Length: 232
Length: 108
Image (cartoon, rainbow over all chains, first blue to last red; front, side):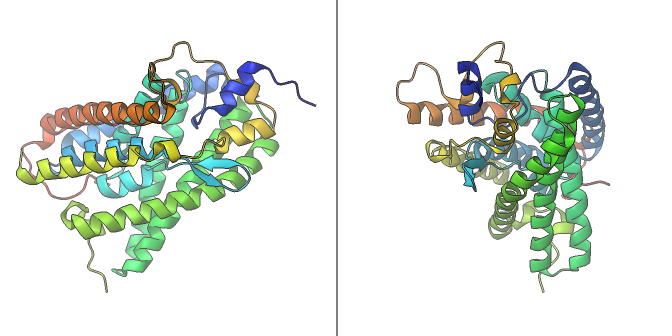
């Protein structure tokens, strides 16, 4: 028997998906900022030396697309919706470090201008959906790409798996942060988060594979060298 | 800026703007985290944001909700693109500008 006060109602009606303020304790939110700042610093250093001419327009376009796609919540089972993260797609096309910069910018603008995700929770949100997601998505994709050995369908399976896993990882990280903050016990929040996001991750996988196929068909030259193995 | 880049930017931004046109059809059901927060009874601990600009992707002062949503998407796409183009341009000038590498950013 739950009493519903209007402020609660408002917060659950909004189609915002990132962690709002209030969910995380100060130490957890602070740790999120420290980890994110460290990762962004590394990302700036790495891209400062490797960012090719090709990457400048592609990073801006990627960020614009991810912002737009994140607005399109798609329904999953049980009156729940999900939307793209985009970190895996960005990491495959741009490399993990440029992808982190793209994701941090998108999530930052969402928090500052669109009140999507809390300001205090911004560090944690960027870490979960940008930093961890880009690094993991890239690692899984490059590993499976190598195994695929030029077979296109296997690379696509790898991209799907990478995308799906990043959503699971972001959900797990969020669960740990909520549990550490004392917001919800881990044995309660972790299974629910993983369950819901197992479905949402399918959408992430499908969009990632479709977007890669689109880029391959239209602008193959945009694909990084390791992704342009001729299909057999 | 090369012609191919201008084409890429125009096409990419065009696709992103096209995507925003579908935003009124997006599901308004609670998303994964909101669903869990509701089910597990902690959605109430969320704080309201300290200020609101284009809160919840609804552009203020526009009566029609669909139009307000699309408008917020267009504004967001342009702002995000401007921010990232600027950052990427500065980063490219910082060290990568002289090298016209065609390989991806994945250096690890």
